[in-house]
Amino acid sequence: MFTLGTAFGAGIGGGIIALVDAGMVGFVPALGIVNAVMLAIAGFGVVVAFRVPQRAASGVTPPAVAPGVALERP
Image (tube, rainbow, N blue to C red; front, side, top):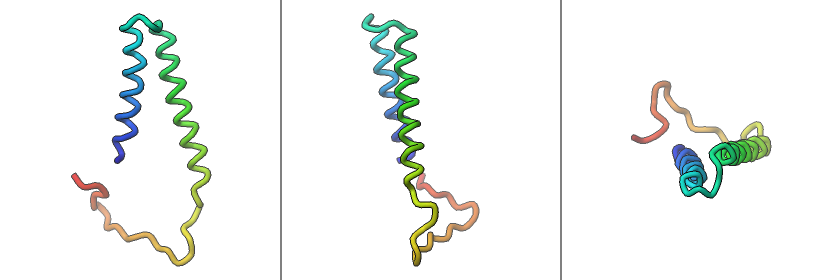
């Protein structure tokens, strides 16, 4: 799940850079478009992060995780 954003970012960026190869967009404007898209996604992430509650709801405790235990399955 953590690599999904990276895969989408690489796919979108690669698609925009492929427009350079097709001659539809110049190289510098294509890089500007890629950077603008990534900046917009980062801005959306910041806005969403401020909507997350600061503390857990009462009565809900997070599960304990022992130190050194991997949080993801290989």
